[in-house]
Image (cartoon, rainbow, N blue to C red):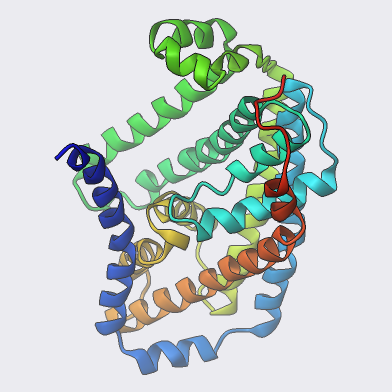
Length: 329
């Protein structure tokens, strides 16, 4: 009887995770598969290959940003290790049920004798910058897709406002030591704070210059991402105006977190938006959307392969030993 309250959240999480695969199965059953295959066969291999090659600067910029964040806690990791560990985190984030692969970076830092809490905090801050900028770009979809978004205009406005407030609050907490101290003292149970050594968060000094530097590298990394994805659109002869394209990809990036690898949820957004804005028949638009989703999935598979190969060196070393207790950060 006592296990029911604990099992219910797990069941709900499982149901949420199954929504994406269920959507994908539905789309495949209701789509003209020969037309989908014919659309995929039209893919320009050179543009697809160039999109694959751009994985290198993408990972480099991600690793560079993580290094900048770690310096807030005076933790030094060379760029090669930072880039490799970021790749491993992406791999585990896609492959693990809880998508908590980024935690391997914190475990790697603990193995080096650094603070586990500082490592986890760096992961949270790293994610905050991505989500923050993507949230701002996704909010532009309210302008570009005003007449096609579901839920009514009032609901869409409220959703965007809440999203922007969440981003602003996160950055404010990251930048204000006094606010973090107040939250730890008044909102977090002291037993939990001591057990997780959350007081290490009070030592995060995020100066305006650091915020600007991290934001610039984040923007550069996202720019590479958008170029990679736009090459896929061009590979399938589906050019979109830059504004709607950026908003569409930002929305996809946010909803993709709801399912492993974005399966199903990514397809749903692409089908809905492209069917609404492309001058194609609904059947052709759906086939084009699923073909684009397939190419996007190929980028994910590439990330998994690279992350897996690097994990053979970095992940196994991280789990092989290291300090049992949280180091001083």
